[in-house]
Length: 341
Image (tube, rainbow, N blue to C red; front, top):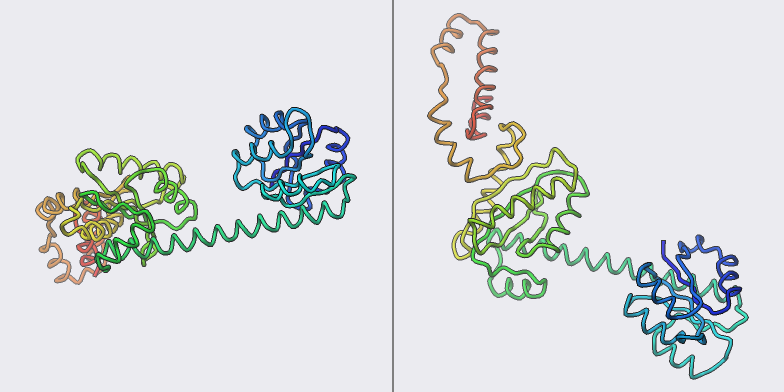
């Protein structure tokens, strides 16, 4: 709901406005009132306000001075002025400050309600336009980042669009990470991460995966920071089935797109690992060789089962080998698929 604050040095005016208008009808709640401008500013510095309804002639601080001070707290504040004087100078100054209407006392209820309705309509439209602008920017950012991380954009266009969107792609190292899950809060968490952390960029790729890119200056120390931030995202989203994979750290001047491809590849290892906190492509590569050496299929047992036409025994042997392979650290998921085939 929108929040309105009422200021007038005549208490019965405030009481009348609170009681006579059906504020909830317009999606508004009265969050406070004051008898002069200075008192109003003190309260408004603590309580967020969207609409200010104020008398223009008051002791201690005039309504015009109050408006100037309140706009420093909220530059988008909407203001409706009340006055017992039909003074053109006041009206002119009010128009300069940007007001919704200048209402004369005694207040015409119909005119007041029409002003409130038009003000909330204007605020609703502004919100819709803002959401549309943010949506368009996110679409453009995703397009540019995806084309960049897959090396499908020309340097001139990349520089121009990166400057337009405020993307810092100039640090020497890149690490891509993939977050795979299908729940709305994740996207919000990742946008917040991008806004509050330097060197972090987020977009959705063509597969629908969430991609977080970390630009780094010192990979040895900053990779730990990246992992910590991703774990914080997991905690914020309260989602146990969030699959996080890390790509390799690549030089921006080298094959930086490999980091994204490696993060994609590492995602597949969630099929064979026991609910890891995250899967690191580098760790997986190091263990693949060990797994290949440590795992062997007992082919004589298969030959014996085939010769004896022991169908049930063969099925049990296949299931046993498949389960053992699936729990072997570092083996390639493709081995599992080949075994199943």
